[in-house]
Image (cartoon, rainbow, N blue to C red; front, side, top):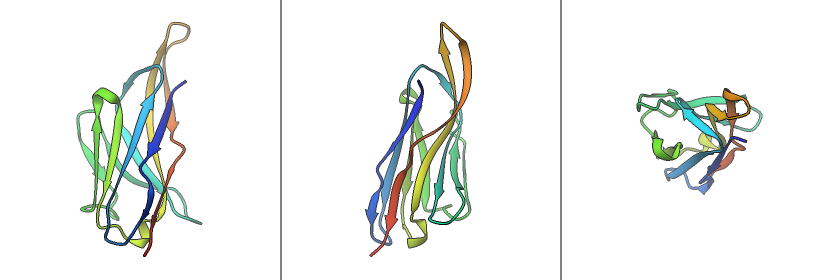
Length: 124
């Protein structure tokens, strides 16, 4: 079974920083694109950032210049460094990736996997 597990959320004051991590585990053959999303209370899930295996990145305008996405390909882990946090950044943050798995029984499969989410609260 393949899963993504986020960590690093918590309570931070406005202007502060947090670093989120998301680790993939299971019978993984490859992970190309890894993404971060967030969902604030009573709002739809919102795209935040994406990174390819080669290191190309893309960000939502709302976080550009404040958030940085990076990854450790050897460990199939993606990070989100969040600086200059604002109260409007308060949300549950989710990791997402299409993951190619391999088992002898079924061979190669591509699965769209989501993590369980980690809560970030920005408040004084």
